[in-house]
Length: 196
Ligand code: ADP
Image (cartoon, rainbow, N blue to C red):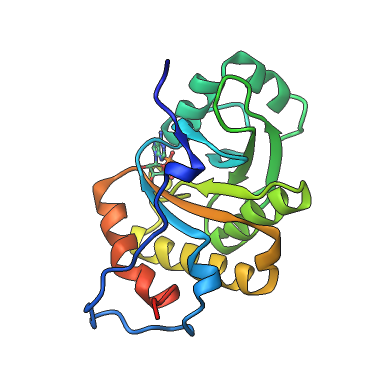
């Protein structure tokens, strides 16, 4: 049986206490805190409703997280992606996940439009009545978006989306593949999701 993680096994993020280096930028909201997780590892192992993919405009597969998702899903994913007419930067398209444990893949095309990417990676699943979603660190790999700035865009966009739409999502999982990205999230989470 292959390794996979059900959403119940992914711990809720507990911000480290006593770290005053990162001042809260939003009010404490325990209801929102309960919906946030930080997962360090391979997004293709998550058994949740939707995983986001940092794709390219053709949607026909490339390296990095896109390559991992296509390898895990198998050739039927490429086949479905081939029917979608590509995807513009900042937008998102939904497909099945085929051989992956997740139910759907949300393909987004990063660039300097990261806020739109993260917004659409939440909005596309909620439009489709999906309640648990994970996102990788979009654009911080081959594309070269500065990881510290990308983490702030991700956290701010998710916080603002949940403020408006908390009843539509049960869990948003930040998936950090690199240890350095995990550390950035650990540092910045208390600013966007402060604990009471
Ligand atoms: P981009 O072109 O958007 O930068 P990349 O795939 O090169 O896309 O990188 C995006 C992010 O995905 C990087 O932070 C990289 O570390 C991460 N990544 C690579 N493989 C995986 C994986 N299997 N699961 C989750 N994240 C991954």
